[in-house]
Length: 487
Ligand code: GLN
Image 1: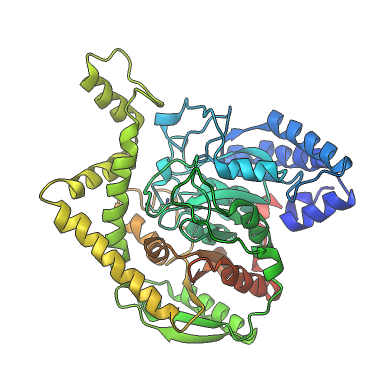
Image 2: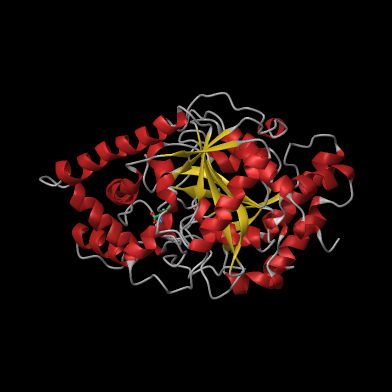
């Protein structure tokens, strides 16, 4: 039973069903791996061993009585941005270091109701602001492929845990690339569904017009399985859309013959590492050999994604984070002189530098006199970018390109230069600005470090992305590679 950690969620589901092992055995095995490796990786903020073993025993009992949900007994990890009843939810911040939510996020509730067993809460950039996990109050996460390097962010803990086989799957969130970029840098699959596809009730808000919940796994098939449970209308989230949820797993069976892939001309310019470019083009050629056709598409406004995002996201975060005032949630400064002192010191002590930088930028672009020049202008440009996608989607089913400009970078390499750090998401942000679903799938190694192929789909067509990635994974074995120290 030593190799259970290397199995996909789908394989584990079959093993549990056949009775090859119990959920308690599986859960204990992964908890042992977490105990052995997490000190090195720092992928988890909280490990919920006791709760996990109780849940696993309940899952085994449910199966024995013929009452197993679709994820019965399968271990997962939640990004620490999702509220979990009775278990600390920190969002990677000192501000929420002591926050215990009185309720579960809808996503946590749905996965739990389907029988999933939660092993712990994953480390992340503070309030999901970052691309390297270095802004976390709990310290950086290390990339299992090279411990000197970052696993990306903000869902770096989720990605590192899945890549190091501490769990077959982890939930994650994506505002500008935080599911897909860490997935690419750790050799995992990451899917950001359509805006409004998955409920955000109980998911701590960063930038509300961009945030979306998703999942990181090692196979597209596993992502399909989990998304089917997570997706769908929730009356507690007014931005969650009432669209039918297809059977994503069943749809994986449909061939990609005839699928039209648009390759964005602007994504293969000098910003992209030459070796990454070759690998990504090879991956697109592989999809063509499976029956898809690729055509070049032009997205003249796509280069404006980054500056647009860095006006819209800080603006929304400055508003969302105003609720952390030392009164209602989280950190409160000691012995305040008056209310003003309480606000200033609680926020000054509770937030880290990157969060403060975003709040200051956001407050500036929203202030009287600058609102029209920055925020309103950014919203207009955002429409131009979304229109670029819509024009391309008139002719193609999926848009393909690189997920990141380079493989994983060294910890500390970009911390002094926010703009270089921000450039990590240059290819992923467009999908958030337009609300489109997008996915990263492992497509090879450059200097022994993994990289990803990025796919964007029509609104609510996560299926096309999952089908493409699944077909590709049937033909390639990049995703089965495991970092040496975690075999
Ligand atoms: N890296 C981007 C940022 O720092 C995106 C983060 C995210 O998607 N949560 O804002």
